[in-house]
Length: 386
Length: 235
Image (tube, rainbow over all chains, first blue to last red; front, side):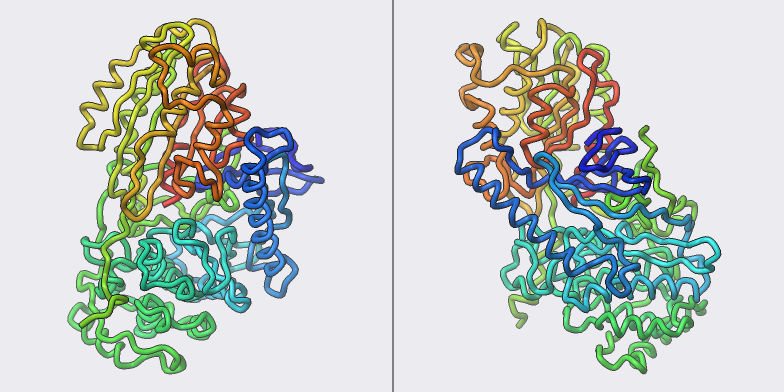
C-alpha cells in the first residue's frame, strides 16, 4: 500500500502509517468520490501461486488465511452498518485480499475537537457516556466482546447544529464471541484498560479459563473510561501496580475521584469489580446514565468525603439492584488525581489506527490529569506525512 | 485459605527485544550518524511514550548487527553485539555504535539478508508474560540472495539458511512448525529501498512494516516514531 496506489479500486490519498496501531498499516482512501479509511493487516499473508516454500508450507498458510477470512466475515455478518443502531459503530464496509495482503475498509469519520471531556456539562458528559454505552450494548446483545475497549477506540463526534458530543465505537478486529476468546498468546487487549481476568488469562493463569472472558471484560474497561470522561483521569492506585486491573487483582481498592456522585461512585466501583459476575450488565449502565445528575461532580469538604463514601457504599444505586454494593471505599482525601510518573519528554499525539482519528485519551493517569494537555480528540491528521 | 483463583500473580510483565540491523557500507555515510544518534535515544524515547500511555516495559534488550558485504570484504562483513540490557548496558551499546564506520561494501547489493538471518536466529527472550521481538533493518541497498557464492567463504556464518524460502520458514507464519520467531511477538520493520529482496519480503512475510527509502540516497525518511509505535501500540 503506497500513496497514490489503487488497491482494489481504493486510491490511497496519503502516506500509509502505523501510527496508533501495532499490527497494521493504515491510510485514507477514495473510491467513486467518497472518502474511506483503509487498514492493511500485517498478518496473515496469502501465498501467491508462485510463492516460495514447500507445498505443505503453502497449505498451512492458506488454511490460516481461510480461518482469518471466516472470522472477519463472521463478525461483519453480525455487525452490519444497516443494523438498528449501527450508526453508533464504525463498521467495515469492505474486506478483501489484494495480492498477498488483507485489507479492511470503513467510512472515514471526521471527529470533533474536544479539548477536555471532563469539562463538559454533566448532561453533555452523560450523553457522551450513554452513546458509548449504547454502542457497546449493540455488541453485547449479540454476545460479542469488543476486546480492546479504550479511549483510542472511541471516536467523539459533534455534528454541526448538534449541541452534544456523541461516541462511536471503532475497531472490531479483535472482537470475539463471549466466552470464546483467542488463545492466550494471541488475544489482543490493552494492558492499561484490560480487566483482571484478561490479564491473568494472558499470564497463563490456569485458573482463568477461556469461558471466563466475557462481555464483563468490556464493562471493566468502560468503568475506567467512565471515570476518565467524567474527571479527566483514571482511578488511582498504589504505585506498586502497573494498572488498575493489577491493583484490583491484588484486592486493592481503586481510589476514585471524591467528586463523583455516590451513585456514579458505586457504578464505577461495581464496573471495576474483581469478579466479572459482580460487574453490572451494560443495560444497567445505560439505565443509570438516564439521570444526567449522576454525572455531576460534587465538591465535598475533605472531612465529609470519607463519610460520604461510606454512606455511598451502604446505598447502592436504588434502581440498580442487580449488582452488589462495592463495600467500603477508600477516599482520595487530596481530591486530585495523583500522577504515577512524569514522562521525560512529551510526544506528539498520533492518530488512532482504527480510523485515523486522534486518540481520545492518554493511557496514563498522570497525563490524564495534566491540565495543560492538548486536545485528546481531534480532526484526523492523516495527511501529516504527505 | 485462599483458592488458586484468588492468588494474585503480580503485574503483567512485558519483555521487549530489539535487533538493529545497520547497513555500514560507504553509501550510508550521510545518514549513519542520524541512525546511530536515533538508536542512542531510542530507549528514553520508548520509555517516555510508554509512560505517557501509563504502561511500562519490564525488560528491554537491544542487539546490534552492523553489516557490509561478504562479496567485497569478508572479514568486516558482519559485526554484532549480544543482547544488551537497557538502560543498564547503555555504555556498551554506545561504544559499539560509535565504532561503526560507514565504509566499504563496494557496489550494491550488500549482505542485508545475512544480517536479517542472524537477527532471526537471535536468542530471543522466552520468559515473562508477553513479549515483543522486533527486528529493524536500516539499509539503502538491495541484498544478495542467500545461497550465493559467498556462502562458501570461511567466515560465512554456518547458521545462515541456504535460501530465502528457508529464511521465510525460520521467520514463520501462523501455525508454522519450523519458525524460530514467536508468532505473536515478532515484527520486522524495514527502512529499505523499494527493491528486492525487501519488496518480496514485504509481500510474502507477515508482520512486516516496510518504509521505503530511495536506493543511494540513504535513509532520509528514517523515522524512529514508526518503530516506537510498533512496540508501544501493541502492548
